Length: 119
Image 1 (cartoon, rainbow, N blue to C red):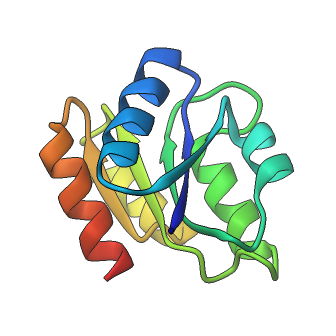
Image 2: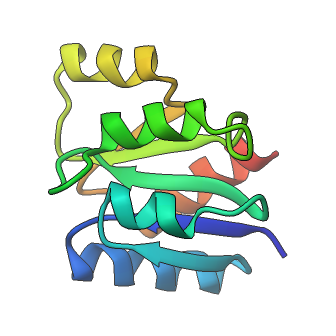
């Protein structure tokens, strides 16, 4: 079973994402921000879904930290965010984001993107 980490400072978003992914047959690991995510990230995490705007370590910082870590360097990272501005997308891409989902999104969209990224 593939394990996906969801990183968001909003408990309701984490719960919705976790519920949706568990229903689709994935294991889910939750983190409240980028620092928490880096502390919990292990080699068995298949993918990371992260919010952009979070305290302590934001989504861009988290992506950079994931890319700098030999254990997670190639782990796909998809950003979940209300930010749809092109500039922020380019910043995420430059940091190493694999993809982008704009909130609000449907459970079907989430599962489709995860399925596509994980092949």
